[in-house]
Image 1 (cartoon, rainbow, N blue to C red):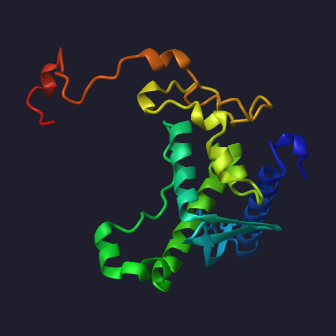
Image 2 (spheres, one colour):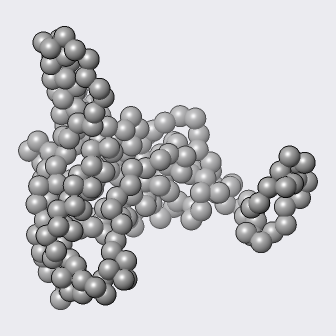
Length: 228
């Protein structure tokens, strides 16, 4: 078993141990059946329950996330902000999707039943679970400490969102300057430091961003007849 020093936190270690066990089980099955199994997504994180909670006079659905002996409850808006943060931290990565919110038209039809509709909630549970497991299997995003904080019980997600590692990010990916070295938001031992692969170049903030209406100059001849 790897030492805790090989991981940034206990949750990081536990996730990787669960995945290692799942991969080992697959290898044993292949040897026993003497047949190759196609790659698959291992579900080591589970969204086991959705319950209606109330806070400050408003109600919302909280989703119970469990893996091993760990369990935490998160609401949809927190999933949404997690993905948004990861997209800003890793602008060159394809961050797994999450189910979209209901459109205004859907709310108009379902009205107040929208949040309580069993089929909608069950579908959202499955998609959120798939999102978390894609994250857990990702070679770099799985080691991102912001992701681990999301999975940690007792952690105020609002405080995480207001931490310097998030508030210090550029507002646009055009100001991002990823380095070649992958890393975590605590790669150098400080939770206040940005990931090495994220938007860390402060000088890029002074680079002008062209308007969408700005004319294109010096166009190559092969693109002259193309529609924008």
